[in-house]
Image 1 (cartoon, rainbow, N blue to C red):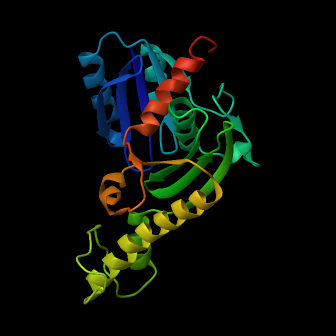
Image 2: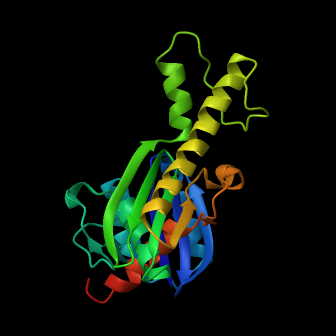
Length: 244
């Protein structure tokens, strides 16, 4: 069994896989990590291997604890990757994006794939049908847009995401909801349309924490998979396990 740990900017996700099958997953904040890890270890005593992908805060103490329990692999650019990386600054490519492209290469071989990860930031990653990663785009996520309007103005409130009822907001709050939510939807559909114009038989994957909020509003054909990054990490662990 494999334990996958995805350390994000807000939450830590833990997932247990048996081969390629996701058995169970957990989500916690950094201060509750050891409690969550104990729960995972008690529920699945046969875990042998572990992979960490971290874009957030994760201490040496936590890494040391994992090394004592499991055969640990930390995701980095030096690992064996299942795609050709043509990013011009490969050392700056986030490990979360590496995991997403790895999942695309594994699950959709010989296809043009656009992976959209709607989280703290919205990332767009493109893998062509020659298994070459070309890059993509990064823009602010929904929560970041709400926080930016509140932080950089004197009077706009801090709101939680809420689907607007109408295209035209008739109050400050409803106008902000239209601006953020419809703005993100227009952005996603615009990117998808441009990629469709340039690449044939495009497969679009929508994942990330806000995917469930956005998927029903997007008119283009997409595959929504909230576990896509975890699946990519598990594939990377299986690929690199023998060589690490």
